[in-house]
Amino acid sequence: MRESVEYLANINVIDDLMLVHQGQKTKDEAFSSVKEKFNDYFKRIQDQDTLIAASNKVIMEHFPAFQKLKQSIAIDPSRQQFFQRIDLALMCQQDLETMLHQGSEFYQRLVEHLTML
Image (cartoon, rainbow, N blue to C red; front, side):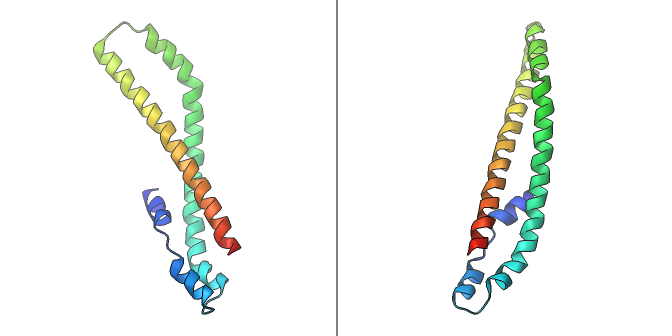
C-alpha cells in the first residue's frame, strides 16, 4: 500500500508531456508506459479502500454495543485507558479511510484529465 501511494504521489509525466508537445512522441506512447503501472497501483488502492470500507461498516454496526458496554463498566483507570486507545484507533481508522478515499478520487480525476490531454 505504501509503495502504491509513494509511486502515485511521485509520478512524473511532465517530460513525456513535453515530448508530446514537441511532437517527438504521441500521447499514447507517452502514457502507455505509465498507464499500466498506474492502473495496477490504482486497483490495489481501490481494493484496500473496499477492505477498509467493509471493516469500517462492521465497526460502525457494533459501535453502539461497544459504547453501551464502555459506559456500563465501573470506573477503572486501566480500563478507561484501554477504551480510550480503542476510541483513538477507531478515529484513526476513519481518518485513514477518508484520506484513502480522497486520494483515490484525486488520482481517478487525474487520470481522466491526463487522458483528455
